[in-house]
Amino acid sequence: MSGRPNIVLVHGAWADGSSWSAVIERLQAEGYNVTAPQFAEASLEVDVARLHQVLARQDGPTILAGHSYGGQIVTALGGDAPNVAGLVYIAAFGLDEGESIGKLLAQRPGGPALAHLDVDEQGFAWMPEDDFLNHFAADVDPVRARVMYAVQQPLAWSAVEEVMGVPAWKSQPSWFLVAEGDQTIPPDAQRHFAARMNATTVEVSTNHVAMVSHPDDVLQLIQTAAEAVQGDN
Image 1 (tube, helix red, strand yellow):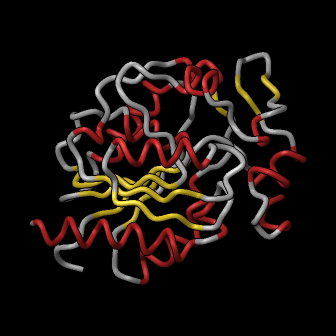
Image 2 (cartoon, helix red, strand yellow; image 1 turned 90 degrees about the horizontal axis):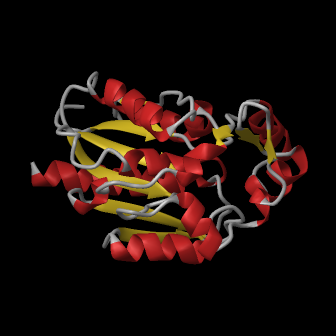
């Protein structure tokens, strides 16, 4: 509908664009133009370049929503995203300049979902089925969770050592959904990210993949961001 920002949804590690399906359906029903691209997750540089490619196709202001490692991609845009009007973090990393996921995990270990990652010969980390079903997607219908496991997008483990530059949230309004039962990124870490970026924050009783298990809560936060941005224009 006229005047509404575009919505670009950025998936995280061990997920793909289809993880946003329920949110996409709801946003489209509300009249939003939505894009949920696939990311190779081979390096932060490659993923940011892919996001720039997608943003160049958007006509007008755009809200970015990143889940998990997708928050890292969104954050790494820095100030180089002239058509981005706001950032939404869904149980995501929101690092500051000079930080890396690896440093964060050394100081504040991740949840049990990350306990047994299988790094292959090419350096990509895969999540074992037991950890995926019982920790990563613990509150997702088991049939749906097994499909998610089958299509998981592994993360180049070298990406966790990549250091963040000037974060995009320093120059963009932000919203943050904290997943209270997250077994991948600890909820306290999410609260820390949200507080220092001065994000409008909601807490939901959900595990890590909130957009799958609680799509209405995710929809509401994205709509809140979109309406705030629309009101400022």
